[in-house]
Amino acid sequence: MEEKIIAGIRTLYSTTKECPNVIRFRIKLKDKVDPEIFHSAVETTMKRYPYFLVELKNKGGQYYYVENPRPVVISDSLHGVNLNSTESNYHMVAFSWQDNWMSLDIFHGLTDGTGAYEVVRTLLYYYCLERYGEELTKDGIRLVGDSITSEEWIDPVEAAQVPNSPEQKAAQAPNSSEQKAAQAPNNTEQKAAQVPNNTEQKAEIPQALNLVKAAGLMDDTKRTVYSIAISETDFMNFNKTNDGSPGTMVSLLFSRAIAKSHPESSKPVRIAFCVNQRNALKATLAHQSLVGGAILEYKEQMKNWPLHKQAAVYRGMVFVQTQKEKILADVNNTKRLAQMIMSLETDQERLDTIDYINAKADHVISAVVSYVGKADFKEAEKHIQDFRTWTKGPGNVVCVEISAVNGRFVLDVIQPFSSPVYVNSFLEELEENGINYELQDVQELDLPDVKLPWNK
Image (cartoon, rainbow, N blue to C red):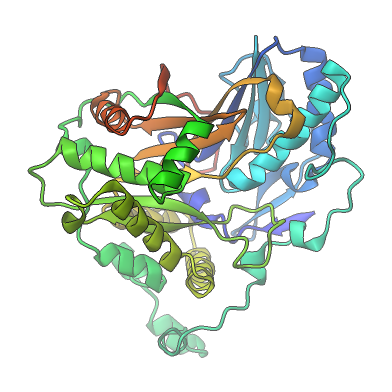
């Protein structure tokens, strides 16, 4: 197989040691992991996902995922191995285990949480089938022997035929070589000026409250994860009472916590809420990284409103920004951005341009909230004691990853600093609203590096 990278280009060139762009799922079972069965389950699982058995290749200045026949690495330490390296046999995915824990690491430019959840479902099916000898439901689980359809395989961003607006058509590159050469950008700002409209518009939004600067945490650089568990039943009832949904309610409560931490600030609190683009693309089975975003701003006039009214506003913001036409426009812009980036001649030019774009985009958000949805790991859930989702948000923003597994929501608050200032404010919000929680632990964020030609 060979797949040219389109949707994941920005993620690829945004990957650094400080921001490795890796998704790590950590699954704690009620029983200790059987290493022999785990190895067998991983090997069987990966036969179902040939599009994840790949390595990164540069062909004529363009990047592709190509088939990697080497074994996927399974290590006996939760630290894991660096991806796209000799340690991982140049795979962009790896597994590990230790005591009761098993872990999956996968490059975010290869897939997103929705795509990676499918791998976890398959892995847990094969592991529990052999470990416990149970009859397990196969419905909704991708298994070896399935027919892999083109919808699952083909990148819908590359295949997208989204009509440009009249303004976009007018801005398209001219045909002649002379005209192209005359318009060639010669510095980072000019290159970044060719970024598609959605990024430009976000960059023009007034700067959001920066959590690091606002709390004076510039010298606190220890990346930390605070994990908070909440009863799924209780939180869903709370959402029903207050016209919320899990993702928007966490976004709202975190916005309120930030605002209360800095009542003197005139800068707005904005949350980037992650959005699955598959339905709009009519590609619900696609394995690629297909995450867009809705910007949720905690507006000044909202602050004295009752919670249910604030929640309704946040849900309305998500509704407006997730209409099919809006998502398709964002996808079209993603494709145009990828084409613009890959038209540059060198990796360094591409890195400089992406750095400039990301710096502009990061200024407009205070935090990121991501919720894939209820995990639905079938019968395997009764064997799961704990479930964590770790990744590294963009720039220096805080990222809240929400998991819903075996009757609990787990909120992993992933910070570029160690201070509990915002976590404490968030926990106060939970308490004030009668939401019981358990602060499970505080850990240093540990993600593997991704060895790319420019960040070794």
